[in-house]
Image (cartoon, rainbow, N blue to C red; front, side, top):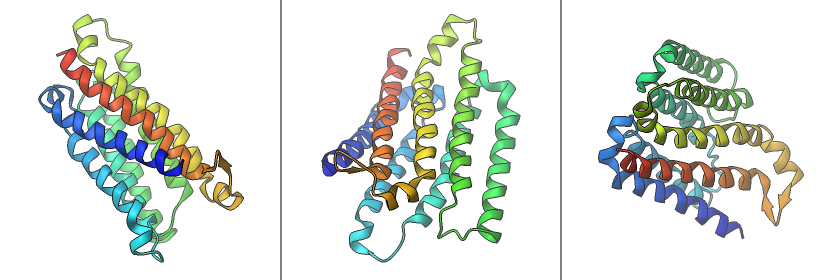
Length: 218
């Protein structure tokens, strides 16, 4: 069951990479071309993290996630910042990213080593990415131009994936140690592992459909 869930998740992630590459010519006008290198990097990272315990069983993978989380904030900030209808929120997005990166650097210098997790930074990452997505939804639903609505419809599906994934995953990661120590399971699946993978299935499926819509609504 554990292997089925993992391979379903990693397969869905890989499928989203393929879909982004196949429809790459239609992604540029929506600012989604950056999805190709980003999703490819995430796929390689997840494969690496899967095999890491077998190769270096005594080394933690926390440092990888601590580098990845600021990268994910920058990535989604870039996507939403590039959307013309987000004009009113662009300065806010820059401010949020600047504060998040500044706090992250200070935290790892003076408080929590980069080799250790920090629950507040985990929650802040989810809050930032969710907030960017909400800004887009607010802007999109205030459009009164049918052509613009159709053009940006694919980004709605990216946003659905984001607002579904990050609030849930942030709570799950926040209680990671508690769920691990409690050995909380569901159908023999460890919840602290199963929840992120299940939510990833939803998010990457939304991404794949968004890439398809980029061509359909071109």
